Image (cartoon, rainbow, N blue to C red):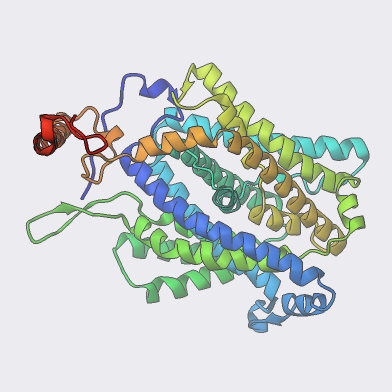
Length: 491
């Protein structure tokens, strides 16, 4: 059943981080539920990688498995397990990111420029400021500027895993802001990878990839169905994109953006009817668990296993490259996301949702400093060929993310009781119609249902009152003297 979107109030255009529409709230809840489970698996995989890589008896086996190569050499695809995880499995992650971006652009918050400006500016500032922090840190200390893009990415799955572990009840408006922020963040990260980390181009392979994408688009427009058509074609496009020299994950994004994410009318037994879900939503529901539950955790397993020691951890805070990554994630992300949001609200004269304060946004901005999946990937690309520096930058990403997660935990816990009350109000459904009451306050039918419920409860209470009064009179009548007994004597 399609639920109606409530009529916006006159102040809706000037309200930042206000209540979501019911369809958007439902979508966000479903998406974040899967991402949260995937985030917990990601966290487990990261811990497992660190243990596997640092326990003396297991370190050799970790290196052996990570560097084990397989694949067709004739096609230039004989890659290590670590390489397959970064270039192959992450293409699934970016495919889902492409669908998310397309949906946000045509059916979500990014469709309305007035609603989109806040998360877009916050995301852009949240990427620019960390890059500046990294650049200033390294320019002042004579470090390498190659890793400027490492602290620019936010890992939504890891951030949600932190929320799940600490048990905070973050309101849906803040969760949606974090999700939209991450979508824009992922798009910018994809552009950074495509523009700044493409050193060579094989135009024949690139032309083949573009042709494959054109076939993919044509099949979608013709309404052709069947995974057995699209999956082999996607693998071919991915292989050609990898061979072209452009990072292969770009193929995933491109195919995700081609899916239709708006429902249309379809033929039914009683005439045309609207689709329950668009093709993009259906595919996303199928692929998101594979991305969040398998692809990203496996990437973490073979990317997060960096050697940790006292000297290595101290180097994180003494080498300009690694210190720049830590400061970029912890300081740059917080200042960028919070500052971008505050300035946007200031110049558009928007106000926060009535239940939220700027302290809540600051805590979420701190949470955005958790950069894991894409930060690790960019770290590998930025310092490719320098294994020592790559491992140190990965250690810096882990350290910065841990510090950001700890700070966010403290800040969010301070407001958790308030968040819990907001969530309870958002989910209250006293008329039991499946729609939270806050979305029906302007519906006369809702108030009539509530009146019937209260009248029924009042009738029940009047009946109980009459029964209790009759029982009391009967007990009093049974007592000698009509009042009661004390010590077996007359009242």
